[in-house]
Length: 239
Image (cartoon, rainbow, N blue to C red; front, top):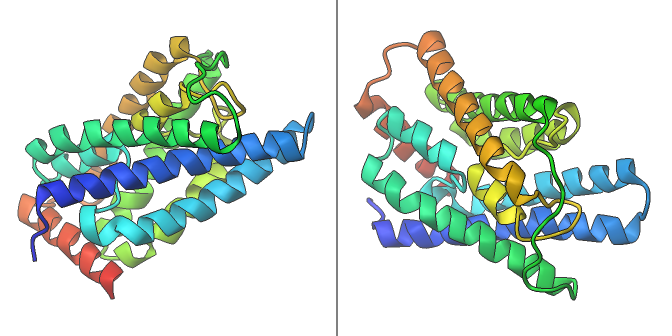
């Protein structure tokens, strides 16, 4: 059964908000629980993010596809899984959700609702890291879908992001919407506005590379096949 666009947008907004709250809230908690121990703070942040991401994907996958990420939506549309009209609608919902989640995280820890981050991240290694992080995330999602193993996606994505917190120097944002959202929290997980555009450009480069590699490794995907996989992944999640 086809799910109306407005219901999918609500799911994308809520899922994105919850994701941002998990990422930023766990970062704030880690700072408070383990002050001056950056390694332990990062470990706490990574584990909680992975666990939360798994739950959020399982919760909303059968409604909107659980994108919560503009580059996932763009790549899905490039294979015909959703329409470009849907992408235009999904992206603002994802960004609004991530900003709302950042505000919620700040308030939950008695901080100012909005505090612009001063954490500058846009060095060469960080940007290269974002290309790799985004590229890898999209390969996990779309190679599993193309080989009809979408039931593994929630666990695989959660595992990948948890690992990428450590093997990527940028701590793996891999998501333009969460990058914008994290700008509104001057805490452990924040990013300075001056770094945001460069991060998003790096993520788009990673997405372009992923599209090319998926087409190379599993050629011949038609728009109908992509749409069928999108629908079947929803069915698998329901079951």
